[in-house]
Image (cartoon, rainbow over all chains, first blue to last red; front, top):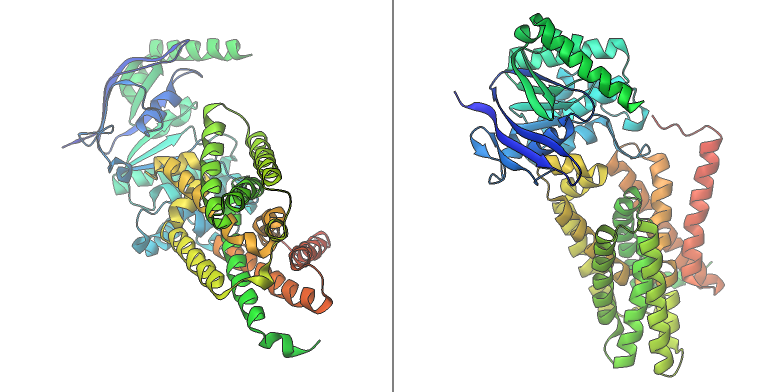
Length: 240
Length: 272
């Protein structure tokens, strides 16, 4: 079976810091990978590089064995859910307008209805998007990311600032996408408990990759968890 | 009011050309307003004023030189904005004033203001010829066709550039294309309301429509309707009362905006 993602010797240097230092790992198809690490650990840099937004890296990133710097079609395979759904608050678009933006071909229009049903957004389809709650918006952005049938879903710390009920619904959706539809999920998160519950693999990043493997292994290793928590705590203090 | 004015050939041309321009400016303006580029049309119009002056001075059909200058300015403003990290409003201000300044200098070389210059500054919709009307309809049709073909890409990159990029949309190219099309739109529209009032056609109907519309297409259609209504009503009323069409058109659309704001603050218009 092809690997979904293969990252080899990924290094990103900014003028002042090395954001990522020789990071290599493989994500298999069907994995649910939680990427954890303190603020400034390079998670965003890693995502930007995978998404084609940062091309100033050395090393290679492959999706389904295709180098993303050479491939023109790899965008087809990815759905991306940003950290915050950013848009002009008075943007005149309905829920279905926004989901439709995620389509690659116009002919797939009935996919929009399908995905709205699946994410329980059908009743909101004609609602203007500025009028939605945080949790509803998050589902709209997942729907937009999924409407073109990607094989990989990438989520950037998506559960910040949303109420508990929405978070549970959201986690349920992720789990179902992964287990029933076989979508590979790459999810960066601050929430260790949630990662423990959902992800079957964990990558722990702090400029270098200091752990990558099954989540059971990570969470049963107290030293690793402690090390992570301390690093994250230090970073937290540092930021204040 | 007599209906006789509706039988005049110049009135037919004015209404046809005016309505087509109204539709074009609405569509283009909606994207610009949502990208926070509201004054961009104004800057392009003012810089094309320099182009018009150049054409009149050199004895070339002034709208041709205006097209050239407008496209070049559109590209410069985009480049300057990204390369030198100057904010959008500041770069627009620079472009706006340099266009007018260049125009004024060229005009003074060629012996001062003429009737031609005034008609470009304030519009001359009642004077459009058959050829002008055909050119306006053809060009507007071509621009609208390009927008229609690339609708999803333009809309998505207007909504959120980063996410559009991740979807594989060539956002930079789309941005350049949109700006070039905006330049072409501005010059095509100069005959309707003139250099000084063009941005009104870009901005006012769209600001109004955003308050009514729910979906994007609905908003676009509402904006077009308000715009066409203002243009046609403005042309007819201005003719009857012998006042300036450009000013009347813009005041009509301002009135629609004012009424909309009134309705909205009275709570009759909800957004959801």
